Each structure stands twice: as structure tokens, then as C-alpha cells.
Image (spheres, rainbow, N blue to C red):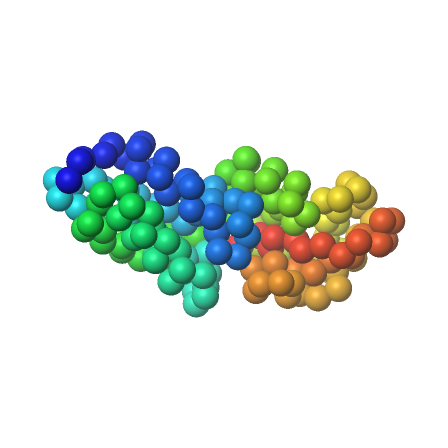
Amino acid sequence: MKTYTEQELFSFLNEIPDPEIPVISIVDLGVIRKIIPQANSVEIEITPTYSGCPAMKQMEDDIISTLKQKGIENVHIKTVYNPAWTTDWLSAEAKEKLRKYGIAPPQESTTDKSFITGKTKQIKCPRCGSLHTEMVSQFGSTACKALYRCKDCLEPFDYFKCI
């Protein structure tokens, strides 16, 4: 078995799309925490985007499959929960890819506390750029997104919640 560098391994994993948002990779998403190349194996540390994320099993399968295609037979995946994943781990490139795909990227580095303050959160429409938007549902196409509608272009869109 050829021994790959950490950078090469990150490059391989960067080819794996997020199962729920295929426009970004699992590396863009920030779930890959650490890659530990060893003589006859590779250990990959991952962190779920939230507890019970249904896409994690698919990500694990995709990591193993991708690395096996590169000739790496012994792949060990370790799930790390601490610290918890945060939208802060999304790369700037990932946020731009989300916007171009029609999903409003997280706008802050903290969770939404608008229900406490009573202030309405202003989310920019990824299609027309308007801030004249409204939340339709706290949950969008997946639990990590909320459904919004633009009052100007009238298009619905998902907003990737800040976690």
C-alpha cells in the first residue's frame, strides 16, 4: 500500500459531496476533523453536523469507498463529538457555493437567538440579494436548514441555520 500525505488524503476526501447538499464537499462542510496517515492504514476523525444527522453513515461509507479506490484498504473512522460541530467550520468557499446553489449560507457565528430578543432575523435571498425575506418554517429540506421566502422575487429558499 502506498502511503499518502495528509494533504493528498484531504484532496481525496474533498472529492466527496455532502449527501444532503451535493454542491459542497464533506471537507468544505468541516466534518473532517483530522486525518492520521499510518503505515498500513488511515484514521479519519469526523464530527457530525448535529447529533443524529442521518447523513453521517453515508459520509462514512463514502470515505471508506473513496479511499479504497485509492488503494487504501484499512480505513478507520472515529467520530469525535467534542467540540461540537459549528457552522463556523464552513469554509468561505463553501458558503459561496451554498449561495450560488440557492441556499442562504449562515450569516453569523452563533445560533439564532431572535426568538429571545424578539428581533426578526434578516436573511439575504440567495437569488436576488434582497433582505425583504420571511421565515416560512423553522425546518427546511433538512433539519439543519430553515425555509424562507423572498418577498421581492417570491422565490422560496433554504437558509443554513447557524449552529
